[in-house]
Image (cartoon, rainbow, N blue to C red; front, top):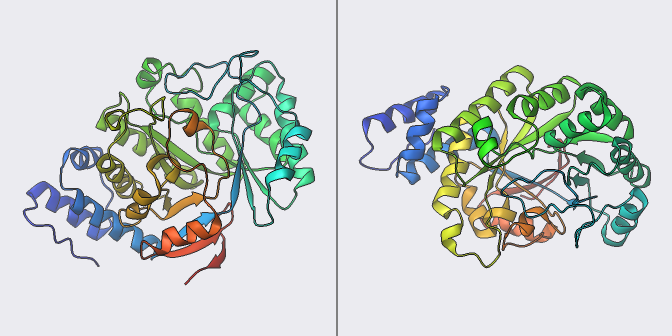
Length: 368
């Protein structure tokens, strides 16, 4: 057991430290207190203790490609700069064969996963989304398809008239193996109304993941933080995810996503601070005691802060990605992807053990 050595710890923090040492679950009040504390080092030490208990010094990554079939979207979320209207300059909708051609030009033999998300394009039928997956699975059967957010699945039910179960089963037939974690934003309907999140509400987001888990489809889940939400909103978000995990045990990873400004040239005052990013990763690790991995998403927080986060509770650094678009459309000024060698270097540089994984966290190679 690690000994948390930060001096001058107050009584409330001391009680939380004892809870963590004993493996007890933290409450809503505990989580809010941690957010309001300025004792970042103690919070980080506690998260590191929990992570080492769960994963040792192993840090996971995957060789993957991010694919975006369409950026046409019916929703106008306040934080999104990726979406386009049908016919707007820069809008596109790729067919399955067109995406296969794109992948053939960029793929290399190590790719194990396609990470597929896109706009809610109501100018094409649900069958388009099915056929998109089918084209990839037939051409690249060795690559796992992690496709669509819970919000996209909810959208598919509306344009198809099918139930969540029926939509997921049709996508499974086409090759779907896992859902992405996006679309959660902040799990508060008040937040979603204020931020014009005109897509799956809280209940629907959770129900899609519940249904997927019950069908044997494992998923990730996210939290987009750094706009109008309160610290309590963030902790309530985590607790709703934790409660569903108690029920289904279907989440593989939790991904805190740092909100990006709409311009790459935005000042640092328009971005989350490194302090806030590290605190959120650490608190996520402490609150989500039943989820194995917390991901440090270098696309949003940068490579060097990702290294530091590995001592603040993170055990996953995502993957090679190859040309990320959504966060960069929103103003991210980080790399659009990293090579396998760079990811290994990044993890080793933090004093951790890189582990190449597949979609389901099966270990492919350990780099001692």
